[in-house]
Image (cartoon, rainbow, N blue to C red; front, side, top):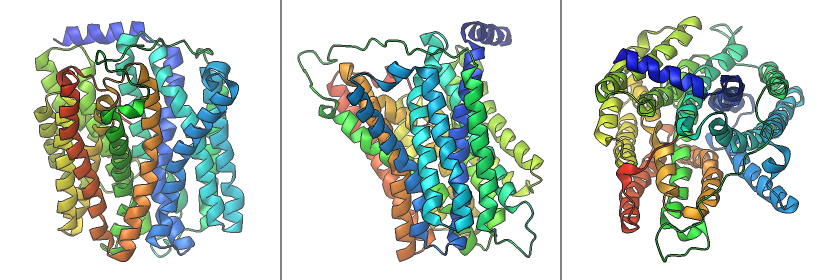
Length: 489
Protein backbone atom coordinates (compact mmCIF):
# COMPACT_ATOMS: atom_id res chain seq x y z
CA UNK A 1 0.00 0.00 0.00
CA UNK A 2 2.76 2.45 0.96
CA UNK A 3 4.70 1.45 -2.14
CA UNK A 4 1.66 2.30 -4.25
CA UNK A 5 1.45 5.72 -2.58
CA UNK A 6 5.13 6.39 -3.35
CA UNK A 7 4.59 5.31 -6.95
CA UNK A 8 1.64 7.65 -7.33
CA UNK A 9 3.61 10.54 -5.87
CA UNK A 10 6.54 9.73 -8.13
CA UNK A 11 4.30 9.80 -11.18
CA UNK A 12 2.78 13.04 -10.00
CA UNK A 13 6.23 14.57 -9.65
CA UNK A 14 7.18 13.50 -13.17
CA UNK A 15 4.04 15.03 -14.63
CA UNK A 16 4.14 18.41 -12.89
CA UNK A 17 6.58 21.11 -14.00
CA UNK A 18 7.83 22.06 -10.55
CA UNK A 19 10.05 24.81 -11.95
CA UNK A 20 6.86 26.57 -13.03
CA UNK A 21 4.52 25.49 -10.24
CA UNK A 22 6.67 26.49 -7.24
CA UNK A 23 7.05 30.17 -8.27
CA UNK A 24 3.33 30.26 -9.03
CA UNK A 25 2.15 29.16 -5.57
CA UNK A 26 3.85 32.16 -3.96
CA UNK A 27 0.90 34.33 -5.06
CA UNK A 28 -1.52 31.87 -3.44
CA UNK A 29 0.45 32.34 -0.21
CA UNK A 30 0.15 36.14 -0.39
CA UNK A 31 -3.65 36.02 -0.89
CA UNK A 32 -4.01 34.11 2.35
CA UNK A 33 -1.35 36.11 4.20
CA UNK A 34 -2.98 39.49 3.55
CA UNK A 35 -6.61 38.35 3.91
CA UNK A 36 -5.99 36.90 7.38
CA UNK A 37 -3.71 39.78 8.43
CA UNK A 38 -6.60 42.20 7.89
CA UNK A 39 -8.14 40.74 11.06
CA UNK A 40 -5.15 42.09 13.02
CA UNK A 41 -5.42 45.52 11.39
CA UNK A 42 -9.09 45.90 12.33
CA UNK A 43 -8.62 46.29 16.13
CA UNK A 44 -5.49 48.42 15.58
CA UNK A 45 -7.39 50.82 13.31
CA UNK A 46 -10.41 50.72 15.61
CA UNK A 47 -8.39 52.02 18.56
CA UNK A 48 -6.14 54.40 16.63
CA UNK A 49 -8.96 56.07 14.71
CA UNK A 50 -11.69 55.58 17.37
CA UNK A 51 -13.94 53.64 14.97
CA UNK A 52 -17.24 51.94 15.70
CA UNK A 53 -17.49 48.22 14.90
CA UNK A 54 -19.37 49.09 11.71
CA UNK A 55 -16.71 51.60 10.61
CA UNK A 56 -13.89 49.15 11.35
CA UNK A 57 -15.45 46.67 8.91
CA UNK A 58 -14.62 49.11 6.09
CA UNK A 59 -11.23 47.36 6.12
CA UNK A 60 -12.88 44.20 4.83
CA UNK A 61 -15.38 45.84 2.52
CA UNK A 62 -12.65 47.80 0.72
CA UNK A 63 -10.45 44.72 0.38
CA UNK A 64 -13.10 42.29 -0.83
CA UNK A 65 -15.12 44.67 -3.01
CA UNK A 66 -11.81 45.29 -4.81
CA UNK A 67 -12.13 41.75 -6.22
CA UNK A 68 -15.44 42.66 -7.83
CA UNK A 69 -14.20 46.04 -9.09
CA UNK A 70 -11.08 44.36 -10.44
CA UNK A 71 -13.14 41.75 -12.29
CA UNK A 72 -15.35 44.47 -13.79
CA UNK A 73 -12.29 46.48 -14.91
CA UNK A 74 -10.87 43.32 -16.45
CA UNK A 75 -14.11 42.72 -18.39
CA UNK A 76 -14.31 46.35 -19.57
CA UNK A 77 -10.67 46.41 -20.70
CA UNK A 78 -11.07 43.09 -22.51
CA UNK A 79 -14.19 44.39 -24.24
CA UNK A 80 -12.35 47.58 -25.24
CA UNK A 81 -9.46 45.55 -26.63
CA UNK A 82 -11.94 43.19 -28.34
CA UNK A 83 -9.68 40.47 -26.96
CA UNK A 84 -9.23 38.82 -23.56
CA UNK A 85 -6.64 40.90 -21.67
CA UNK A 86 -4.70 37.87 -20.42
CA UNK A 87 -4.70 36.33 -23.89
CA UNK A 88 -3.12 39.57 -25.09
CA UNK A 89 -0.45 40.10 -22.43
CA UNK A 90 0.06 36.46 -21.38
CA UNK A 91 -0.04 34.54 -18.09
CA UNK A 92 3.37 35.59 -16.80
CA UNK A 93 2.91 39.30 -17.53
CA UNK A 94 -0.60 39.17 -16.05
CA UNK A 95 0.77 37.86 -12.75
CA UNK A 96 3.59 40.39 -12.73
CA UNK A 97 1.18 43.26 -13.41
CA UNK A 98 -1.10 42.06 -10.58
CA UNK A 99 1.83 41.93 -8.14
CA UNK A 100 3.01 45.42 -9.09
CA UNK A 101 -0.52 46.82 -8.61
CA UNK A 102 -0.60 45.24 -5.12
CA UNK A 103 2.87 46.64 -4.37
CA UNK A 104 1.63 50.11 -5.32
CA UNK A 105 -1.17 49.69 -2.78
CA UNK A 106 1.26 48.96 0.04
CA UNK A 107 3.14 52.20 -0.73
CA UNK A 108 0.09 54.17 0.42
CA UNK A 109 0.57 52.85 3.95
CA UNK A 110 3.59 55.12 4.39
CA UNK A 111 1.88 58.50 3.82
CA UNK A 112 -1.32 57.15 5.41
CA UNK A 113 0.56 56.33 8.62
CA UNK A 114 2.39 59.67 8.65
CA UNK A 115 -0.88 61.55 8.13
CA UNK A 116 -2.87 59.21 10.41
CA UNK A 117 -5.41 58.87 7.58
CA UNK A 118 -7.85 55.96 7.79
CA UNK A 119 -9.31 56.63 4.28
CA UNK A 120 -5.80 56.48 2.80
CA UNK A 121 -5.07 53.24 4.71
CA UNK A 122 -8.11 51.44 3.35
CA UNK A 123 -7.45 52.89 -0.11
CA UNK A 124 -4.10 51.11 0.03
CA UNK A 125 -5.84 47.85 0.92
CA UNK A 126 -8.30 48.41 -1.95
CA UNK A 127 -5.44 48.70 -4.45
CA UNK A 128 -3.79 45.57 -2.98
CA UNK A 129 -7.12 43.79 -3.57
CA UNK A 130 -7.29 45.05 -7.17
CA UNK A 131 -3.92 43.44 -7.81
CA UNK A 132 -5.07 40.22 -6.16
CA UNK A 133 -8.14 40.19 -8.43
CA UNK A 134 -5.95 40.08 -11.55
CA UNK A 135 -3.71 37.47 -9.92
CA UNK A 136 -6.75 35.30 -9.14
CA UNK A 137 -7.95 35.46 -12.74
CA UNK A 138 -4.53 34.32 -13.97
CA UNK A 139 -3.24 31.91 -11.33
CA UNK A 140 -6.06 29.36 -11.11
CA UNK A 141 -6.02 28.31 -14.80
CA UNK A 142 -2.23 28.60 -14.82
CA UNK A 143 -2.00 26.03 -12.02
CA UNK A 144 -3.70 23.61 -14.40
CA UNK A 145 -1.55 24.64 -17.37
CA UNK A 146 1.80 23.76 -15.72
CA UNK A 147 1.01 20.05 -16.00
CA UNK A 148 -1.48 17.63 -17.54
CA UNK A 149 -5.19 18.30 -16.99
CA UNK A 150 -5.77 15.02 -15.15
CA UNK A 151 -3.53 16.16 -12.29
CA UNK A 152 -4.79 19.75 -12.32
CA UNK A 153 -7.06 19.26 -9.30
CA UNK A 154 -4.09 17.97 -7.29
CA UNK A 155 -2.07 21.08 -8.12
CA UNK A 156 -4.99 23.35 -7.21
CA UNK A 157 -5.44 21.49 -3.93
CA UNK A 158 -1.74 21.91 -3.14
CA UNK A 159 -1.94 25.60 -4.06
CA UNK A 160 -4.93 25.93 -1.74
CA UNK A 161 -2.85 24.38 1.03
CA UNK A 162 -0.15 27.01 0.47
CA UNK A 163 -2.85 29.69 0.60
CA UNK A 164 -3.98 28.38 3.98
CA UNK A 165 -0.39 28.35 5.22
CA UNK A 166 -0.40 32.07 4.48
CA UNK A 167 -3.64 32.56 6.43
CA UNK A 168 -2.17 30.65 9.37
CA UNK A 169 1.12 32.51 9.75
CA UNK A 170 0.03 35.92 8.40
CA UNK A 171 -1.70 37.11 11.59
CA UNK A 172 1.25 35.94 13.70
CA UNK A 173 3.88 37.73 11.62
CA UNK A 174 1.90 40.97 11.29
CA UNK A 175 1.01 40.90 14.98
CA UNK A 176 4.68 40.43 15.92
CA UNK A 177 5.70 43.25 13.56
CA UNK A 178 3.14 45.61 15.14
CA UNK A 179 3.24 44.53 18.79
CA UNK A 180 6.66 42.89 19.00
CA UNK A 181 8.12 45.63 21.18
CA UNK A 182 4.98 46.29 23.20
CA UNK A 183 5.11 45.62 26.90
CA UNK A 184 2.28 44.38 29.07
CA UNK A 185 1.70 47.96 30.16
CA UNK A 186 1.74 49.32 26.61
CA UNK A 187 -0.54 47.44 24.23
CA UNK A 188 -1.76 50.48 22.28
CA UNK A 189 0.01 50.15 18.94
CA UNK A 190 0.90 53.38 17.19
CA UNK A 191 -0.59 53.63 13.72
CA UNK A 192 2.95 54.24 12.47
CA UNK A 193 3.84 50.68 13.52
CA UNK A 194 1.72 49.43 10.61
CA UNK A 195 3.66 51.08 7.79
CA UNK A 196 6.93 49.12 8.06
CA UNK A 197 5.44 45.59 7.79
CA UNK A 198 3.31 46.61 4.82
CA UNK A 199 6.18 48.35 3.06
CA UNK A 200 8.14 45.12 3.53
CA UNK A 201 5.18 43.26 2.04
CA UNK A 202 5.33 45.59 -0.96
CA UNK A 203 9.02 44.82 -1.39
CA UNK A 204 8.15 41.11 -1.28
CA UNK A 205 5.55 41.63 -4.04
CA UNK A 206 8.19 43.30 -6.24
CA UNK A 207 10.78 40.58 -5.55
CA UNK A 208 8.28 37.85 -6.47
CA UNK A 209 7.41 39.77 -9.65
CA UNK A 210 11.11 39.82 -10.57
CA UNK A 211 11.40 36.11 -9.76
CA UNK A 212 8.42 35.35 -12.00
CA UNK A 213 9.95 37.44 -14.81
CA UNK A 214 12.96 35.14 -14.90
CA UNK A 215 11.01 31.94 -14.18
CA UNK A 216 10.00 29.36 -16.77
CA UNK A 217 6.30 30.12 -16.43
CA UNK A 218 4.56 30.02 -19.83
CA UNK A 219 4.12 33.50 -21.30
CA UNK A 220 1.21 32.67 -23.58
CA UNK A 221 -2.27 31.65 -22.49
CA UNK A 222 -3.45 28.42 -24.16
CA UNK A 223 -6.73 28.47 -26.05
CA UNK A 224 -9.37 26.70 -23.99
CA UNK A 225 -11.92 24.88 -26.12
CA UNK A 226 -15.22 25.22 -24.32
CA UNK A 227 -18.23 22.94 -24.62
CA UNK A 228 -20.44 24.57 -27.25
CA UNK A 229 -23.53 22.49 -26.57
CA UNK A 230 -26.26 22.93 -24.01
CA UNK A 231 -26.24 20.09 -21.50
CA UNK A 232 -30.01 19.57 -21.60
CA UNK A 233 -31.00 18.62 -25.21
CA UNK A 234 -33.38 21.12 -26.75
CA UNK A 235 -32.99 23.57 -23.86
CA UNK A 236 -31.01 26.34 -25.53
CA UNK A 237 -29.94 29.09 -23.16
CA UNK A 238 -28.55 32.44 -24.26
CA UNK A 239 -27.02 33.43 -20.91
CA UNK A 240 -25.61 31.86 -17.75
CA UNK A 241 -28.22 33.85 -15.82
CA UNK A 242 -30.89 31.49 -17.19
CA UNK A 243 -29.56 28.65 -15.04
CA UNK A 244 -31.12 28.67 -11.54
CA UNK A 245 -28.24 26.66 -10.07
CA UNK A 246 -25.88 29.51 -11.03
CA UNK A 247 -28.04 32.42 -9.90
CA UNK A 248 -28.68 30.76 -6.52
CA UNK A 249 -25.01 29.73 -6.45
CA UNK A 250 -23.90 33.35 -6.84
CA UNK A 251 -25.83 34.20 -3.68
CA UNK A 252 -24.32 31.12 -2.03
CA UNK A 253 -20.75 32.24 -2.83
CA UNK A 254 -21.61 35.73 -1.56
CA UNK A 255 -22.88 34.51 1.83
CA UNK A 256 -20.22 31.77 2.12
CA UNK A 257 -17.29 34.18 1.73
CA UNK A 258 -19.27 36.58 3.92
CA UNK A 259 -19.66 34.25 6.89
CA UNK A 260 -16.08 32.98 6.54
CA UNK A 261 -14.58 36.47 6.64
CA UNK A 262 -17.02 38.18 9.05
CA UNK A 263 -16.67 35.45 11.69
CA UNK A 264 -12.93 36.11 11.91
CA UNK A 265 -13.19 39.88 11.45
CA UNK A 266 -15.46 40.33 14.47
CA UNK A 267 -13.66 37.79 16.68
CA UNK A 268 -10.96 40.21 17.97
CA UNK A 269 -13.57 42.72 19.15
CA UNK A 270 -15.55 39.94 20.86
CA UNK A 271 -12.48 38.59 22.65
CA UNK A 272 -11.37 42.08 23.76
CA UNK A 273 -14.70 43.58 24.80
CA UNK A 274 -16.43 40.48 26.16
CA UNK A 275 -13.52 38.39 27.46
CA UNK A 276 -10.93 41.02 28.33
CA UNK A 277 -8.18 39.91 25.93
CA UNK A 278 -5.52 42.41 24.95
CA UNK A 279 -5.24 43.19 21.24
CA UNK A 280 -1.74 41.73 20.95
CA UNK A 281 -2.91 38.38 22.42
CA UNK A 282 -5.68 37.76 19.90
CA UNK A 283 -3.41 36.81 16.95
CA UNK A 284 -2.98 33.09 17.85
CA UNK A 285 -6.75 32.63 17.85
CA UNK A 286 -7.13 34.38 14.50
CA UNK A 287 -4.34 32.11 13.28
CA UNK A 288 -6.26 29.09 14.61
CA UNK A 289 -9.40 30.19 12.76
CA UNK A 290 -7.60 30.35 9.42
CA UNK A 291 -5.63 27.20 10.24
CA UNK A 292 -9.00 25.50 10.66
CA UNK A 293 -9.64 26.07 6.96
CA UNK A 294 -6.27 24.48 6.23
CA UNK A 295 -7.19 21.53 8.46
CA UNK A 296 -10.45 20.97 6.58
CA UNK A 297 -8.93 21.38 3.14
CA UNK A 298 -6.04 19.03 3.82
CA UNK A 299 -8.67 16.49 4.84
CA UNK A 300 -10.58 17.01 1.60
CA UNK A 301 -7.37 16.83 -0.44
CA UNK A 302 -7.05 13.13 0.40
CA UNK A 303 -9.54 12.40 -2.39
CA UNK A 304 -7.20 13.99 -4.94
CA UNK A 305 -4.83 11.02 -4.82
CA UNK A 306 -5.29 7.63 -6.45
CA UNK A 307 -4.97 5.54 -3.31
CA UNK A 308 -6.70 2.46 -1.95
CA UNK A 309 -9.89 2.98 0.04
CA UNK A 310 -8.22 1.71 3.21
CA UNK A 311 -5.26 4.07 2.94
CA UNK A 312 -7.61 7.00 2.24
CA UNK A 313 -9.47 6.24 5.46
CA UNK A 314 -6.20 6.39 7.39
CA UNK A 315 -5.16 9.66 5.71
CA UNK A 316 -8.57 11.17 6.38
CA UNK A 317 -7.66 11.03 10.09
CA UNK A 318 -3.94 11.81 9.71
CA UNK A 319 -4.16 14.80 7.32
CA UNK A 320 -6.19 17.13 9.59
CA UNK A 321 -3.93 16.48 12.58
CA UNK A 322 -0.84 17.04 10.40
CA UNK A 323 -2.29 20.45 9.47
CA UNK A 324 -3.09 21.11 13.14
CA UNK A 325 0.53 20.23 13.90
CA UNK A 326 1.67 22.94 11.47
CA UNK A 327 -0.44 25.47 13.40
CA UNK A 328 1.06 24.35 16.72
CA UNK A 329 4.57 24.49 15.26
CA UNK A 330 4.34 28.06 13.97
CA UNK A 331 2.84 29.20 17.27
CA UNK A 332 5.57 27.41 19.20
CA UNK A 333 8.16 29.23 17.07
CA UNK A 334 6.33 32.47 17.89
CA UNK A 335 6.68 31.50 21.59
CA UNK A 336 2.94 31.48 22.26
CA UNK A 337 1.46 29.36 25.05
CA UNK A 338 0.08 26.25 23.32
CA UNK A 339 -1.89 24.89 26.29
CA UNK A 340 -5.19 26.62 25.32
CA UNK A 341 -5.16 24.92 21.91
CA UNK A 342 -4.74 21.20 22.65
CA UNK A 343 -8.44 20.77 23.41
CA UNK A 344 -9.18 21.87 19.84
CA UNK A 345 -7.99 18.45 18.70
CA UNK A 346 -11.32 17.06 19.94
CA UNK A 347 -13.26 19.61 17.86
CA UNK A 348 -11.45 18.42 14.72
CA UNK A 349 -13.03 14.97 15.19
CA UNK A 350 -16.46 16.52 14.56
CA UNK A 351 -15.24 17.85 11.20
CA UNK A 352 -13.82 14.43 10.26
CA UNK A 353 -17.18 12.80 11.04
CA UNK A 354 -18.97 15.37 8.86
CA UNK A 355 -16.52 14.69 6.04
CA UNK A 356 -17.12 10.93 6.24
CA UNK A 357 -20.90 11.40 6.32
CA UNK A 358 -20.82 13.45 3.10
CA UNK A 359 -19.44 10.50 1.07
CA UNK A 360 -17.95 12.88 -1.50
CA UNK A 361 -21.32 14.23 -2.67
CA UNK A 362 -20.92 18.05 -2.90
CA UNK A 363 -24.58 18.83 -2.12
CA UNK A 364 -24.59 16.49 0.87
CA UNK A 365 -21.29 17.96 2.09
CA UNK A 366 -22.63 21.50 1.70
CA UNK A 367 -25.74 20.60 3.69
CA UNK A 368 -23.90 18.79 6.51
CA UNK A 369 -21.13 21.38 6.89
CA UNK A 370 -23.63 24.27 6.77
CA UNK A 371 -25.70 22.72 9.55
CA UNK A 372 -22.51 22.14 11.55
CA UNK A 373 -21.50 25.78 10.96
CA UNK A 374 -24.88 26.99 12.22
CA UNK A 375 -24.54 24.79 15.30
CA UNK A 376 -21.04 26.16 15.99
CA UNK A 377 -22.22 29.79 15.81
CA UNK A 378 -25.27 29.12 18.00
CA UNK A 379 -23.10 27.38 20.60
CA UNK A 380 -20.74 30.37 20.54
CA UNK A 381 -23.64 32.81 20.92
CA UNK A 382 -25.25 31.04 23.86
CA UNK A 383 -22.09 30.22 25.79
CA UNK A 384 -19.28 32.38 27.12
CA UNK A 385 -15.57 32.23 27.87
CA UNK A 386 -13.25 29.94 25.95
CA UNK A 387 -16.09 27.60 24.98
CA UNK A 388 -17.54 30.38 22.84
CA UNK A 389 -14.11 31.18 21.39
CA UNK A 390 -13.56 27.56 20.33
CA UNK A 391 -17.09 27.43 18.90
CA UNK A 392 -16.60 30.58 16.79
CA UNK A 393 -13.14 29.40 15.73
CA UNK A 394 -14.50 26.02 14.59
CA UNK A 395 -16.54 27.83 11.93
CA UNK A 396 -13.30 27.74 9.93
CA UNK A 397 -13.43 23.95 9.93
CA UNK A 398 -16.95 23.92 8.52
CA UNK A 399 -16.27 26.65 5.93
CA UNK A 400 -13.20 24.80 4.65
CA UNK A 401 -14.83 22.73 1.91
CA UNK A 402 -17.78 24.95 0.99
CA UNK A 403 -16.16 26.93 -1.84
CA UNK A 404 -15.48 23.90 -4.08
CA UNK A 405 -18.88 22.39 -3.25
CA UNK A 406 -20.78 25.56 -4.20
CA UNK A 407 -18.61 26.18 -7.25
CA UNK A 408 -19.09 22.64 -8.57
CA UNK A 409 -22.86 22.74 -8.05
CA UNK A 410 -23.31 26.23 -9.51
CA UNK A 411 -21.48 25.73 -12.82
CA UNK A 412 -22.58 22.17 -13.45
CA UNK A 413 -24.76 21.86 -16.53
CA UNK A 414 -23.91 25.32 -17.91
CA UNK A 415 -22.29 23.94 -21.08
CA UNK A 416 -21.04 26.76 -23.30
CA UNK A 417 -21.86 29.30 -20.57
CA UNK A 418 -19.44 27.74 -18.06
CA UNK A 419 -16.74 30.42 -18.37
CA UNK A 420 -19.29 33.22 -17.98
CA UNK A 421 -20.71 31.49 -14.91
CA UNK A 422 -17.26 31.05 -13.37
CA UNK A 423 -16.48 34.75 -13.78
CA UNK A 424 -19.78 35.73 -12.16
CA UNK A 425 -19.06 33.49 -9.17
CA UNK A 426 -15.60 35.04 -8.67
CA UNK A 427 -17.20 38.49 -8.57
CA UNK A 428 -19.32 37.46 -5.59
CA UNK A 429 -16.22 37.30 -3.37
CA UNK A 430 -17.30 40.83 -2.41
CA UNK A 431 -19.58 39.15 0.15
CA UNK A 432 -16.55 38.99 2.45
CA UNK A 433 -16.66 42.75 2.89
CA UNK A 434 -20.40 43.39 2.75
CA UNK A 435 -21.45 40.69 5.24
CA UNK A 436 -18.65 41.84 7.56
CA UNK A 437 -19.98 45.38 7.63
CA UNK A 438 -23.54 44.12 8.14
CA UNK A 439 -22.40 42.09 11.15
CA UNK A 440 -20.47 45.11 12.44
CA UNK A 441 -23.65 47.22 12.17
CA UNK A 442 -25.68 44.57 14.01
CA UNK A 443 -22.95 44.48 16.70
CA UNK A 444 -23.27 48.24 17.20
CA UNK A 445 -27.05 47.90 17.52
CA UNK A 446 -26.94 44.89 19.87
CA UNK A 447 -23.75 43.17 21.05
CA UNK A 448 -20.87 41.51 19.22
CA UNK A 449 -21.94 38.22 20.82
CA UNK A 450 -25.42 38.41 19.27
CA UNK A 451 -24.18 39.80 15.95
CA UNK A 452 -23.12 36.28 14.95
CA UNK A 453 -26.79 35.67 14.11
CA UNK A 454 -25.83 37.18 10.74
CA UNK A 455 -23.58 34.16 10.15
CA UNK A 456 -26.36 31.78 11.22
CA UNK A 457 -28.59 33.27 8.50
CA UNK A 458 -25.78 32.83 5.94
CA UNK A 459 -25.38 29.15 6.82
CA UNK A 460 -29.17 28.70 6.70
CA UNK A 461 -29.21 29.89 3.09
CA UNK A 462 -26.33 27.54 2.23
CA UNK A 463 -28.26 24.60 3.69
CA UNK A 464 -31.32 25.67 1.68
CA UNK A 465 -29.22 25.91 -1.50
CA UNK A 466 -27.82 22.42 -0.93
CA UNK A 467 -31.35 20.98 -0.82
CA UNK A 468 -32.78 23.12 -3.63
CA UNK A 469 -29.92 22.65 -6.11
CA UNK A 470 -30.16 18.88 -5.72
CA UNK A 471 -33.66 19.00 -7.20
CA UNK A 472 -32.65 21.48 -9.91
CA UNK A 473 -29.74 19.38 -11.14
CA UNK A 474 -31.74 16.16 -10.89
CA UNK A 475 -34.37 17.68 -13.20
CA UNK A 476 -31.55 18.33 -15.69
CA UNK A 477 -30.43 14.70 -15.52
CA UNK A 478 -27.21 15.43 -13.60
CA UNK A 479 -25.90 12.84 -11.13
CA UNK A 480 -24.44 14.67 -8.11
CA UNK A 481 -22.33 11.70 -7.08
CA UNK A 482 -20.30 12.20 -10.29
CA UNK A 483 -19.55 15.89 -9.73
CA UNK A 484 -15.88 16.50 -8.96
CA UNK A 485 -15.03 19.18 -6.40
CA UNK A 486 -12.22 21.60 -7.21
CA UNK A 487 -9.84 23.43 -4.94
CA UNK A 488 -10.78 25.53 -1.94
CA UNK A 489 -10.85 29.26 -1.99
